[in-house]
Length: 346
Image 1 (tube, helix red, strand yellow):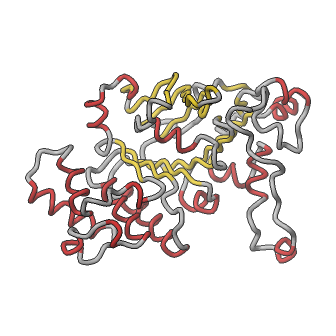
Image 2 (cartoon, one colour):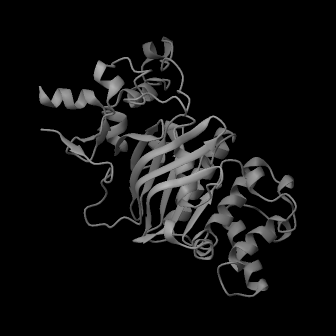
Image 3 (cartoon, one colour):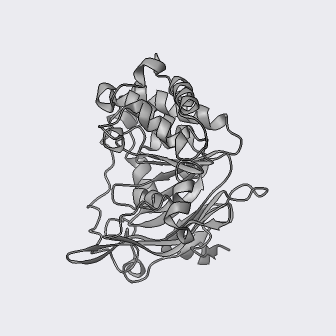
């Protein structure tokens, strides 16, 4: 018999491991002219030591807002973390002062942002930005900080690092700027790295290099974890151990990579996977790619029931009036769908 899981515990990790980061019932709202918009509606997840956790979903699903909430970078106003807990090794980040949170950012949790050209300060040299990251968290001399910056830039594959310390962000290519962002994020050896679309707008070859670099740097630090936010399922298949599928500000499905790709349960997850081009079956190549019907509803006009019901081909009347809980399939996989409960009851 299928069990219903509470939203406060939506993921399973290694039984002998305690989560490094636990998000519990996170609610994030934004005050806008036409009302209060709920961007994240009760998200709960765990990040375990040494794992790469993938978070996927369309634009507007709440992935980046969840990440920014962990970093306490939601602008207030108009944003507001209205509820929940962000537990880093048992310490609630929402209860920390500004100064205490400053010590956490870059030191214990670091983030690689989507667009390095806007994340890097255009009026400061790359070397200064990497050095200041170290100096703000460690009591070392500027000479030592400079040497650390050179070592890190070399580690991420930037040639002639010592000479390039004096260059500005606009003097680097997109791929090189992203490498600088990785260097800044990892220079203090954080426990958790949040990578928010780290390969957006990069060519395929550079994407592969950036992903390989992130995984390589993670492997050199015992217990380090990565929270990889992306819409690219191919990237998830190559790099992640577990996957969280988000839609409408809520988690819709959780499972291992094998579970999500081989036996997806939620109609939205199935739709995402069906939209991928097939390469193994010649006949499949000739078919038109599947498209999920409709559009993501406005954040102010989310359905009363299941948030995916307006686009779901398997919708039933109950979906339109009652939001389903996350159902535990008993194998670590969890799905927010009434159809799974109906099947179990039968």
